[in-house]
Image 1 (cartoon, rainbow, N blue to C red):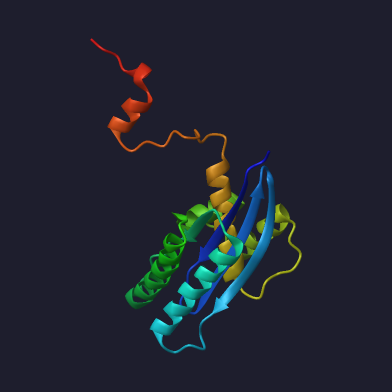
Image 2: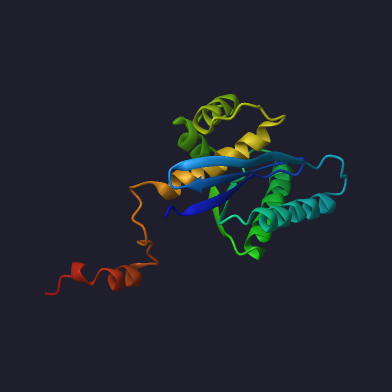
Length: 187
C-alpha cells in the first residue's frame, strides 16, 4: 500500500499570502488547492496576522496535511518589510505547530533550485516548470500561489529523495553512536 502525504506549502506575506496543498501518493502528485489570501483590504497589521492564522488553521482542519513547508523570508534592504514578513511567517508557523504539523523552512533559492534546477529562476520559469511537472492548465491570478506550490513540491523532492536515509536522522554524536554500534572501533 502506498503512503499518502498532503503537504501544505506557504509563501508568506502580509499583503498576499500564497498557499497550496499537494497530495503525494507514492510517485503520483496531485494539486488539491492553490490560492492566495488577499490581505490588503485590512489596514491593521494585527488583523492581517489574525486572518493568516485563521486561514492556516482552517486549511489544516479541512485538508489534514501531514507536513507544512514554508518559504523563508528573502533578506532585503527594507527592515520594516522584513519584520512584517517575519510576523506573517511566524503566525503561519504557529498555526501549523498548533495543528500538530512538522514545519520545514526553505530558502527561495532552494525552492527554485529544486523545482527548476536553477536557483536564480524567475517566477515565470518556476510557474512553467510547475505546469509541466504537475500538469496544471490554468494560471492563477498571483504568483504567490504558484510560489506556495513550488514550496510544497520542493518539500516533496527534498523528503522523497532516494539519497535520504529513512530513519537515519541524528541528534548529535551520542545519537549516532547509539544507532550505529557496529561502527565504533575500540582500541
